[in-house]
Every structure is written in C-alpha cells, then in structure tokens.
Image 1: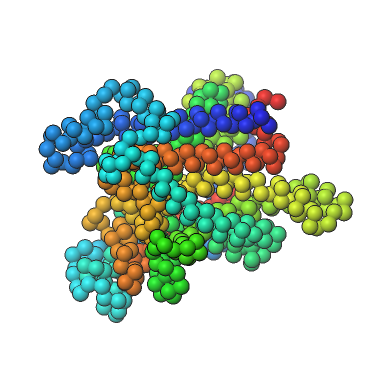
Image 2 (image 1 turned 45 degrees about the vertical axis):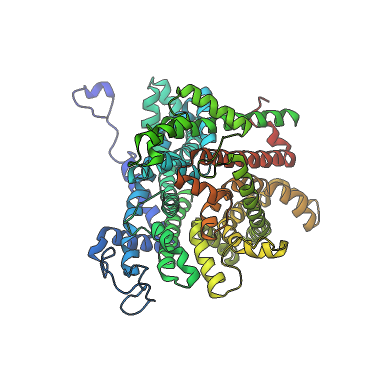
Length: 302
Length: 318
C-alpha cells in the first residue's frame, strides 16, 4: 500500500524493513525450485528436446528442409537411401522434407485451440464453481451432453455442416475442449471458494467479478497451466485425426495426418515409408507433449 | 436403489435431449444454405432448391427442431441421400459389425489392462510399475489411426501373421472372422490399455492405502480374502466408470480404424456420410453413438451403485 500524502501518524509506525514478508521474492524462489525439480526429471528433458526439435522444424519450414517439400519431384516411391533418407512418396517428393515441414500447421493450430479452450473453460468453470446453484446445475447438464459425443464425431459433423478451414477446425476443437476444461476448473474453484480469503474478499464488499478474476483465478493458475499442456497434446491428437479423416488441415499442406490419409493404402503393397515416418512424427510429438504435461503436474503436486 | 435408478435414468433422458439440441444447432441453425453446401458451388439453383426442400431447410426453425426431436424419439430419420434406403436399415447392420469389433477389442483389453494395473499398484515405484505407467501413457496418447497403420504394416504386411484387411469373406466361419478382426482389435487394445491400466492402478493404490484394508489385514484375514473382499471391490469402481465412458469413445476410435482396415462398420459409414454430405445418415449416426454412450455410462453407474451403496446417495439431500 502506498502511504503517499496520508499523514504517517494516522497509519501508525511503519513496519520495520527486516521481517516484512516479501511475497514476490518468495514466489520467484518457489518457481525457481519447481524448475530445478523439473530439470531433474528425465521425462521432462526428453519431452522438451523432442518438442524443441519439432518447433524448430515448424519455424524453419522449407528453409531448413533438405529439399522442397511440395515441388521437388524425383522418381516416385524410392525406398530410403542416402539421397532421400526417408525415401520418396507417390509423387516423388522427399519424405524427410515433408515430415519436417509437416510440423508447422499442427503446431500452429493445436496451441491456439488449447489456449482458447483453457480461456473459455476457465471462465465457465469459475462461474460454475463460484455461484453454484442453478447456474451450475444448468451448465453442468449442457457440459455432460457435450461430453456424451466423442469429440472427433461432433467435429466431423461441424466441419461437414460448415466446411473445412483452419479457423473452423481450431474453433471446433477449442469449443469441444471447453467443457472438459470447465469441469476441471469448476472442481478447483469449488475448493478455493470455501477458503477464508474468499470470504474476506466478499465481506470487504468486492463484486463477484472481482473475487473470481482477482482472488480465485490466480490461485487456480497451476491447474490452468497443467490443463493447457494436457490440452495441447489432445489437440494434436484430435487435429491429426480430423486431417486424416479429410475434415482437418487441407491439401496441399504436408501435414502428417493428411499425408497418412493419402498414403496408407500403399502399405498393403509394402511401400511403408511415406506413411510410417509421419506416423512416427505424430506419435513422438504427442508423447513428448504428454511427458512435459505429466512432469509439470507431478512437480506442482509435490 | 429404485430411487437412484429413476433419478439416473431421468438424467440420461435430459442429457440425450440436450445432445439432440446440440446436433440441431450444428446441422440446422449454423449453416445458411445447406442445399448449396451439399450440391457444391457449381450446381444449378434448381438442384439446390430441391435439396433444401427435401431437407426441410425452408421451414421455420421451430418446425425443424420438432421434427428432429420426433425423429430421435422414434429413431426414424427418413431416407439416406446416398443409399436411397431408410437410414435405420443402413445403420443397424453397420452397427452390428462395429459391435463385433468393439466386443473383441474389450475382450482382449480388459483382462490384460486390469491385471497390469493391479500388478503395478502392488509393486508401486518399482521398475515394473514405472514401465506399466509409461507404456500406458505412451500407448493411450497415440491416435488410433497411427497405431492402426503401424500394426497393419508390422504384423499384417511385414510378418504376414494376420489378414491386412478386416472384412472376412461372407462364407467364413466364426473363427476365420475373428482372425480377420484381430488386427484392428489390437489397435484398439493399444489405445485403451493405457487408460484402463492407469485408472485401475490408481484405484487399487487408494484401496490398498485405505483404513479398512489395514483393519482387514490386522484382524488376520488371509491375503487372498483381503484382496478379493476388501481391496478389489473398492479398487475397481473407477475402472468400471472408465470402461463405461470408454465404450462410447471406442466407437469414435473405430472411425479411423475401419477406414484403414476397410471394414464397413458404423465408423466408416459415418465418415463417408460426412464426406458425401448425407445429412440424414450423418445426424442419425452421431445421435446413435450418443445413445450408445448414454447406455454404457448408465450401465456403469448402476454397476457402481450396486458395488458401493454410498454412490446411490450422490446428489440426494441426506
């Protein structure tokens, strides 16, 4: 609190400099401690390195791929060799270059969808957990109805009714993840809302909006961070599946799910490389995200 | 118990009603010219008008909503655009084929994953435990189509142990049919092993740590009796709940797998209806999967209420 123009006598003696509780310093110390704990977990290190690799590919795009992922045509379906480490696809394009470039679209779409769903879910969840009563009851029923249809299925319905585009895919995944986030945040808010600091704020006469955004939200931020990392993983999962089904990222993107849907029939003729390398890429990205999410969750709870 | 069953069934009905409403908003309210979306940008206006007429897209929204609700209750969604047959007649044979695959997947997944979960819980924080947890985390986070194509290549093509495509010739016997379905079912195992093993492990750990287990051990019951009567009865409740929700999700995992293994089940029917813009079929398919999910979660909740009398009181003013 700033003393400013108020007569110091009214406020009583200033507290001594020594034993003052330095909240910001304390927080910085705590987060440094958490980072130290994270760096001791092999899962976190491996996951972060894989993520870093795919992020580099996504940012670098065709500047760092060995060949042009879209327009460099060689003999088609060559097996992996020194010229083409991962072979060439059905149109003679370099599979390695396409796998590297394929990271971009999904790594743009998934985090945006995750951020949006966490933001909307946090809003809904705090309202439900703070007000309870009929608001909570009504929203809970709607959330349950959303959760009763598998995400991929309802996304398929939305995309066929509205058409496939980047914005629609991101928006769909964000909306469909919102109820799941809201449920988690609601549970966290219910626990927080019973604590004394919330009662104190209410007795001070603060508005519901203030209590929710300034008092409760900062205290559930840990839950939000974990929820975000988990959602990124699921968003990659869902968006790749949608792309595989033709309802996600659209051609000519070298996106992994899309590439697999173009090439999986070739497996039966033993041409495995155009399909299995992108499949490996998806698996590594999703597992890496989950390793990071899991480590953050464990460290936060410890 | 009767009171609980009535409450729980009423709740399912409300959820189902909301689900139909969500589908209505997506299919009937959001698109502005469904006939144009189906026919494409170059179709003549007459075709578009005819389609809109057939879909009833020109009627007042309230009428359309009433019609969809009525269709959902009677499960009569009219004729499929593509097949020219009543939607029901197209959906149910496909559902039967998918159900075969789901049942086989569950029969393979449940024993392995429940056993692995209990095994890991009893050897907490050992290498064996950590392997189960890590394997479960990894396998359940990989999309079905990714494990599907990988298994198809490794086991079907490279090793040649199992048929690469899932549909058996029509004169095949029961076991031949099983052999054809085994590869996609294994892909389902890869995904669902992780969920069920991890939830079983967590449930078992909390039951092992509970006071009633300590009491049972202290009063000198045999190890076997402690495990079966005290630990398992409590430990498996979350597992039952997860199995209930996962069966519904299994049907969505099927969408990709049925494409890869060229199997004419509910999943491939729905995805083809989506790309053909066959809205009556697509709507009915989505609602059907919603109904299946509702029934399986309902069953799971009733089983849990039977296992644990306390669960029957949830939501009631005691």
